[in-house]
Length: 167
Ligand code: S3P
Image (cartoon, rainbow, N blue to C red; front, side, top):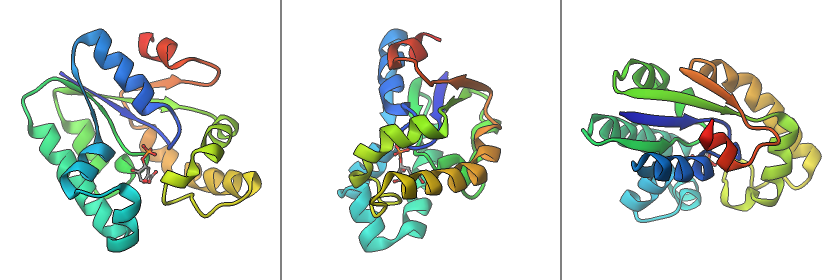
């Protein structure tokens, strides 16, 4: 069994995934960490030197690899993973996987992401909370269609990672 967490940047995929994996005695995997480990450089460095298209290609390649493994695990996707190529179909069609969308509101995402935007190449250049809010609003509008195709949707606003993992 594979539990796959999807959701926008800052929705808590890594924090919730770590706790959930512990509860279920499954291994925890983070797709960004896996990409970074296999490439031997950070996500920011990949975007900077090789570009987003290269990153998306690696993201799909490594996702397919992980889905093909026989192991049980909890996997945190990157915020964009289900929204590119045929990734959402791949995730939905995988018989051993349950796809869960961690849904956070625009305001909560803005609060969480403003402090943490440096390590995220898509938003690192946004230097005011207003610019970030605008960016997230447009991005969520485009991405929600993909996130909503998950098997389950869990709202995360006002909840601790522990409470979301329990749910
Ligand atoms: C991205 C989200 C990031 C990372 C990359 C692109 C996105 O992951 O994969 O910076 O397109 O939303 P997190 O959601 O873990 O920040």
